[in-house]
Length: 176
Image 1 (cartoon, helix red, strand yellow):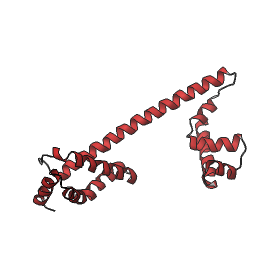
Image 2 (cartoon, helix red, strand yellow):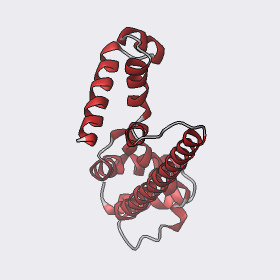
Image 3 (cartoon, rainbow, N blue to C red):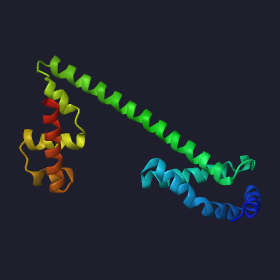
Image 4 (cartoon, one colour):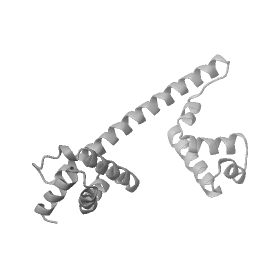
């Protein structure tokens, strides 16, 4: 598609012609997808970002002045969409870490208040991901078999074994 055809489609799309926007979308889809996959390195996230980018482009098409290429405008929307996602993820990770830290602090306080000892090992165990912590706890504290744990957690037996193994390995690494 040459620039003249693209400009005609943009004018039509600005006037509300959805077919014109669809044509623009289809023409630039591959270019924007390749850009976003290189940024995110995650195909699922790329699909979401691409969809959001095109939705924003559709909603804000009236703001496109034509001072730059349409593809440049789309790239700027895609870039901002990606950066907004990254900021949101960072805020969410910080929030989750704070909740995790506060919860661990409350559990530690409750355990010691009730007269039990809270060791450094318990802190390290509590810092494991729950997906790893649960199988270890069920296997080594409660004595369930791998098969029983797999049924309880709705996992394959091999997944349970690998989580227990990797969790124990991680704990040993921390202790040494």
